[in-house]
Length: 189
Image (tube, rainbow, N blue to C red):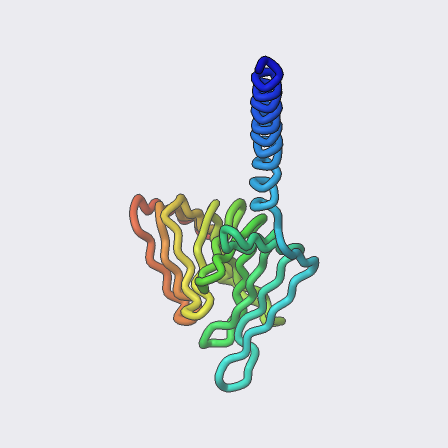
């Protein structure tokens, strides 16, 4: 009779040991699966994308030094993204930043860190060149509209303006400043 109890006790101890080992190995695997969820499923170097309008003319060009796609959160991250677009008058505009992102189900690029919007000289001398700077900006690819709620600084020949928030329609060359607009004008001599 005592042999049965001894065998039952050994079986119980062995079973508890197996359960403890199973729990320990599950705890080790959980951080690995979290790490895998934060890994990109693909990445690319020197990304180039051309978008043509209905008339067959080149409308926008998108470039990035690097792109990483994260499938679990549905986001592509870009490093040194740049959009070059042509407005209705033929003027070429460029939007650049240190980083950017695009959700899988949207057509809006989010630019972050040192965002710059500026016209590009196409061989003609332009005296009204303006530089727009902010820290974060959304850009609707289809509508060609840039928007931010952060501080915006615009610098042009002899002038400097700041505002909190902006909407820029690149096609129409129309900018709307939201609040706190301050302008300094110094005529050139």
